[in-house]
Length: 112
Image (cartoon, rainbow, N blue to C red; front, side, top):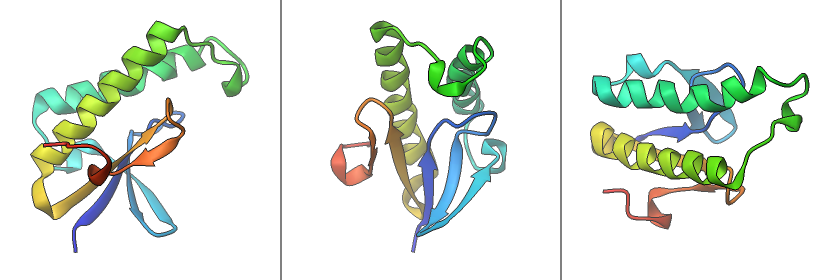
């Protein structure tokens, strides 16, 4: 059975999560067999909302323009595809789409 990983930004955390049913654990991306460019992209992607969060006291008050939201979602989906490709068949990678408000799995979209 493949390892299950979710790509999802969360406040002050790494954007990767182990999940098996109801058990979730934050994963340090450097602990996985990912290329340096992918690790850098993950860090940069997660830093975008973290920077916005620094500007407000209450996280739901973060403001996103339509262009910012679209760019964040596009990069997230691209990183998702890259993760699936780099981690291979031993991993099942899903993506938490904030734009769609749901979890996307490889069956929802070609990630190869």
